[in-house]
Image (cartoon, rainbow, N blue to C red; front, side, top):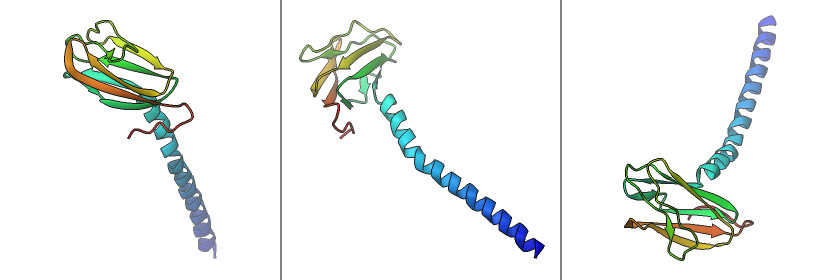
Length: 129
């Protein structure tokens, strides 16, 4: 009988650990989404490309472009909404998108480099297409 009580106690402890682990796993998607949202406001400039090339954000979001290339680049909106100075290696440019819309941009030094920021209303879904 004593062995049965010990087994029951171990089983109860294991069930508790499993339930705690499952609760922690259920919390991961929300934490991952918050991390992705924070990371999703950065555009890297490298190898003559903007990455991601298209980004969807909510109105009020600040996007940061980081030049990780070894040559200068710029970030210029085709409709003059924003324009960076020439960004040397590791330089950053930030812009806060206050209005919904689609903002196309390019590097004025290398016009084949293009990107798009899609801004949805602050109450709308900000998932990338």
